[in-house]
Image (cartoon, rainbow, N blue to C red; front, side):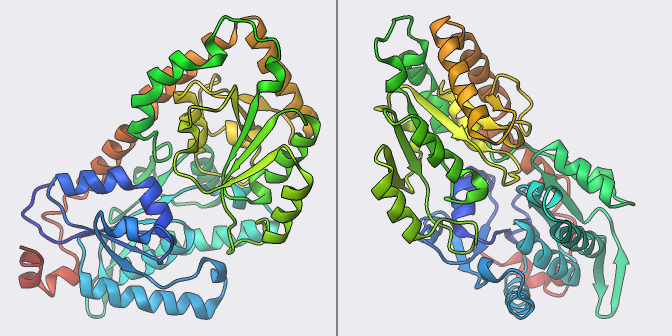
Length: 423
């Protein structure tokens, strides 16, 4: 992309935390190639950090009220006004509600659009009502993204105006099976947001210091294992399974990195957390911390991902792979990553299956087989799932629009403003 077109690219999400946590390198790369970039997301605890990187405009919308029609209409009107004022050359939206609103607004203004879906598994495998609801929403998104406004009262068909990014093949297959007449050329598979460079740089150090890769025999090895949970404290993320496991291994440490999600009825409450703190003595709630897997003082760490939430791509697994940390994952989480070495897979979402995986890790360690497995997972994560790789693929998609030549209905009405947006 050249700097001839000075209109900005807008990144949209239903949380500032998402953009700051998963799109940090993308923002830096967009700015590096002389493009203006603006974030449009609700104000939260990370908004201040996000605003230090780029222009952040708070978009007042509520995830907790995402099925409230009145709240949806208010969020839609706010975005209409913001997009009309900013006049971007491209919108890249994330998460379902934001994508739906973006599809309507971008069609109305004729703006090129990229829609990223972080994971639709929770809809495809959930109750019939939720599944039908999602299919209807996606059909609406797909319909409006096939049309663009050309004049005051004229809309024309343009199926190349929008592209869709999914994080795993299962989600693409589900959409293709449920919705006919889709343009496959508009579908891209990009595996998550990638492993941050910080993990890759520290990978050799963690490999050299990992107790899992030492050929030394540890007397109390089994009791030294530390189990780690890194996610929002949602029941669908497997937090209750993690807590139940702590009762089966009372001599081991269980560390929980994550916070309450007030917008979800699946989240633990403060009252429940207080109960667990009081009655589960080997469990420590560490709250939200930056890069918890990079802590170097954890003895024999094992990352547990007992989730049945339906993520698009569980980044925690490949982060652990990069650091030579064994992973035990639910079958739902594990199937999102193609490498068979990335995790020990629990075939069922019950304690017996997870305990079986723990026993397998201990067996592989005693037989010195775990080293080869962890090394294959580490090399695969660095080669195929780096954040640099993901950002490169995303910018290639941006370039496919030929943004400097394509003009939306909105930009055509303001050619002078388009050329003089920022000095």
